[in-house]
Image 1 (tube, helix red, strand yellow):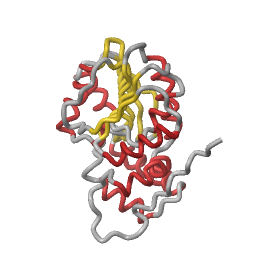
Image 2: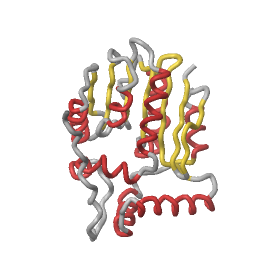
Image 3: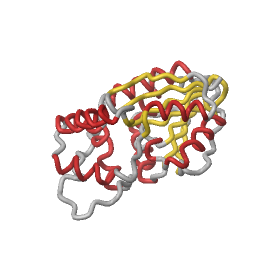
Length: 248
């Protein structure tokens, strides 16, 4: 039996950087991405398991499943276990390096279903059609605020009636008082996962102009304004949340 390769350890911000550049999903990050996200996102594996079981209840025969910002394919691999093998998966990501790594991981996972990996900018119109499930897992937060409503409308239009959007995001607390607390708890989480103070500080600086979180209430309002009917929170941990939005 072939052993699953262990992800390379995330040391991107371990050494002091004189001038920290904006965070990019290039080759350096791609190599350590799986380790980075598992140590930086609380309950990441549980989020993936939840996405899989929710998607399994909403996928429809003959439709497509889209993963926007699919990165290295972890979500598709999780969902693959639970969904009929004739359902086509379409992963879209702006980073060609991510898609290359994703393709390798899907093949290593023994994918037999039809799938496409597409280079696409989420700030532009995406070719979404005949979708029963669309996933944005820690992705919308990297889309510039000016373009988020347009992206969600794009998704809504591409979903079939009865289809769902699954949205996982880093969020701001509704109150600035709690926001300070939640950030403190989050950085404590990173420390427990063996990130140093320098790594935490430098990554925060790199993400400052790239990852722009909304409040949970703002994301819910945005979903409603773009046409979605019923919306519900299915996951919440301090400043991380998961939402499901239904198209009637």
